[in-house]
View 1 (cartoon, helix red, strand yellow):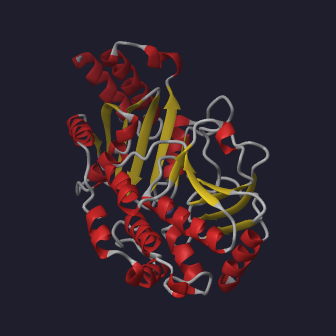
View 2: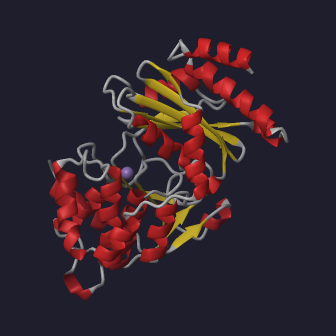
Length: 358
Ligand SMILES: [Mn+2]
């Protein structure tokens, strides 16, 4: 497999790039796996003599993730302009193989490392790339490096507890509380557990949600349309901070026993934001997204996905300036239904009956 050498190779690449500061730029809304892996990467950089900053563009949208960051004191830098990234020389990506699309990365920033468990759209061009498909979490890969001797936990009298705790929680959330964990994920969790802070773990594990997110889930249930084993639901408008109410509602709807694929969407700021969840092996979320929503004018797909989940973002453009939220929502729902009807044709009829009922 050559896996033992991967850690040595990563060590070599980081240790040969200590001349300029590193930035670990998180993709999308930071989730526990990305946060845990970023902390692991930052820890490695610092052990090897490089300075590293964890940065993100989009807000941390889930209450439980904000709690994780607060409880573990995770140092995060929010960036909004490309110039915010100019002081860094090296870029590290964790839990993603392409850099965040909502910001232009300065040319001077060199993509150094990519560690991920998702299938890449294009093979990333970085000095070090470790993409594994036999794990469900990026934190598993970083725990594997440590277990194989790259800055092992607990050695050297350092307090590794916040990093280990974040990594453990990252594995826990990306494996649906270990339900879909592979042997490698379970092994990594077992390796990290003795270094975790048990109280912090149980506090972040409470999975609190905001009142707004709960309301959004309620609206999704009200709007639920079921076609055989496919469900679609809209949540209306949600704030950027509560954007994760959309995947949360999709996860919840998927728990209904007669449904195996759920698509939930809503308006977030100036765009339509949606999440697809599926339990059915024959449904490929990326292909579903492509068939329904296609590409934007620059040829980039509106949506993407991995084996069991996918998402899409469609900018509303000038329509977003409309003051008539009810009208805007009707337009959004009609557009989404029409597009999804390319994959689930019966949806077109639902739209007809619905608009007549209006
Ligand atoms: Mn992940």
